Image 1 (tube, rainbow, N blue to C red):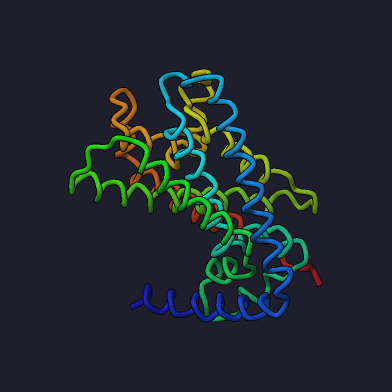
Image 2: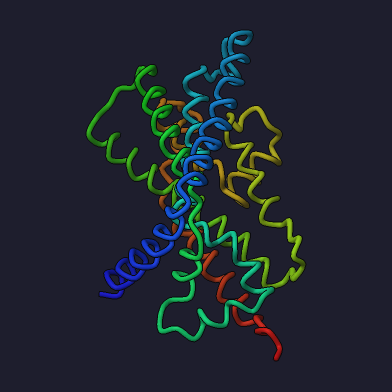
Length: 265
């Protein structure tokens, strides 16, 4: 019942934000176009690299392309549906979080719908297209079990990305500066997940697999789907990692909320 009410409230809040944004249609299309162009340039860069190098540590072009697309697809979902996480620092600094705390609604739910990143639509559309093209060019022995696990890992990747973003932005409860760069620093680590982590040092592999598990967004699901025996089995832990990330994000948020001092007047 609580889940149904939460989904209902989210839909209502999201719809209100969407209506406000669509009043400025030029901005809407510019943001989508900019997102598509940015990610398309990254795809072209990969294509140029693979024209000179046939594979990177055993990973072919379309396999790496799949990982690249997974990273910006999940980023697109986070931007479109959970853009409010990136506005948490401002809400804390300006004291605007007060009105959310007074409403009879989950605070985190209200924060998620504080804004909508329309550029996320471009990332989602292009991401799905490239993911589809990648899977179409790779010889995968599909079974019912593999399809089900693939879908679960796909959903887990989205949850992990959103949870990491939310936890990183909770730093605003402690770092009161308007120029808080911590969330962007954490966000930048996702760039490493666009490529096979096996090309990086052991320390970096451990960091993006366990500390900030961006590798479970792209590399490990890809390793499972493409039958990379030395790495694929780790991808099966994706759902557990998603639960862990959500739990840690919620814990950090609750601790941060207890430190919130309001506007002070």
